[in-house]
Image (tube, rainbow, N blue to C red; front, side, top):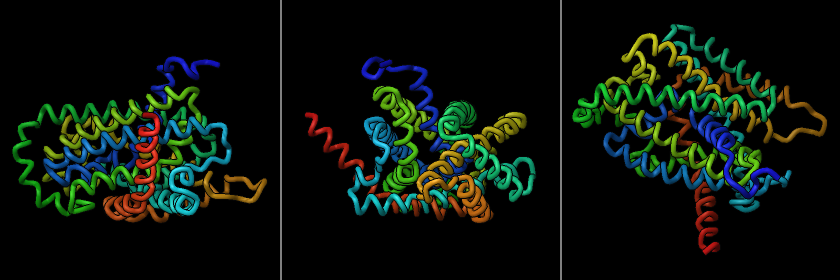
Length: 361
């Protein structure tokens, strides 16, 4: 029976933590654009956003992954109806497909922006390359996809932390000037309130990622593996956000006008590091985009016996065309929109989770 009710499998926990991280670290996170808009744009209040997201990621991540494990034998399980009821759950089951299509387009656009900003490659060609890679990843199947993205997640975290830590240590003296960047950063805010931004960021990640997180929990061999994979993944992720937020804030005046602020920070440290980090950025984009592709293609119902390869190709073409729009504008438009759409779902997960705690007591 393995370790179903025993101790954690450390290797499994690391795998699930890496796969958890891989979902969130896409073009928005890896390029710094997501952190810039949802966190850094609020100046010193950005640390309030970090704290609220730490609590939210720990709780929601744990809930979704352990729920997935608990229903791993239920082939017809729908986490939206489980948390929100039949009507709202059915609505969200369809809504998430539309939101994921928008997010994939943002990721594809981000790949083009990253390759263009560092290598001078035409951004449409860069986006096309990413689209082809993501389609190929979908065709290899979900289990193989998990092995790929779980390996990418830790690599991205290491590079992101390195760039962030070096920048913070080297330039921390600039922290007293952070208040001067308020005017330049204010126009990037997804909401006038930093607290609303905190909730929107949680909603953005857990509405779009809930299907993936639940499926990830279903692949776990024990509840403890799923639980600790989510906890370590969430904690490591938010630590990375806090460090990168500080690093970007130290260069707020310049970062406000950049599509890829993290690449700028890496180049400031070393040109060679910038080149390596640009590859890491593309891997980060690939990790999120490929997992979203799996979610979309496997949620769309097809007639029995119909292959999904054609569906995947159609999704690839559609998102590539939409991803031709400018990256920073797509993040500013679509990410807050998805966040608002997911507020009811997040509230339902929180309600059921808190209710469960009282029942256990």
